[in-house]
Length: 255
Ligand code: IPD
Image (cartoon, rainbow, N blue to C red; front, side, top):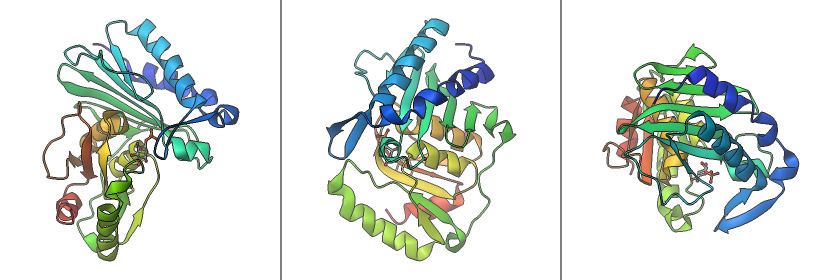
């Protein structure tokens, strides 16, 4: 499927007013334990669905806020999280993103992570590199754990994982420079691609949380695996570890 990345980026940026609507962010429903959805999530998804359907009728949409039973990965699939970091959105924490990837012919072809508060657009095309607002991205060259900044995901909807997660966070905290928690997995992956952090990891991420970010990290020269160090099949919910490579090898030993 032929997609013009620049055109797609402009389309996504045009959704900024919808994304930043504070009234919509206040219309909240609880989907599950600590798991919320707002009117903004639905409006952004529905608006983008209509635009994509009109421009690319051959592609299906897999979205966080819809039933995705009918998705056929043999055909092109958009993978969308309309608001990654919904809890941040509700609190006006200003670290939420729109994450969009295209899966076509068995692989990820493109990924975009848009941060509407800062105007940052992280984008990647398979084999063509990763960019931030047009500037090429490269992962960090840091190899020393004690100088690394590591971003962690708390798996907020899986409280049964808290004890193990926080054991890992503590051990890593004592070994690295410091840890961070941004609250949007897509943004945390984009930060690894941009070399702002050396690694990010979180258990049980859905493909809409990590698909675009995974391509960003790979195209910026980094590595994304599951927690066993194995390649990730993006059609599945997975424990994710993204890194610049060398620091990821070291983080694996903490799991
Ligand atoms: C969540 C965010 C959060 C991460 C969760 C995700 P959502 O996405 O990425 O940072 O910890 O695991 O589910 O639910 O806000 O789209």
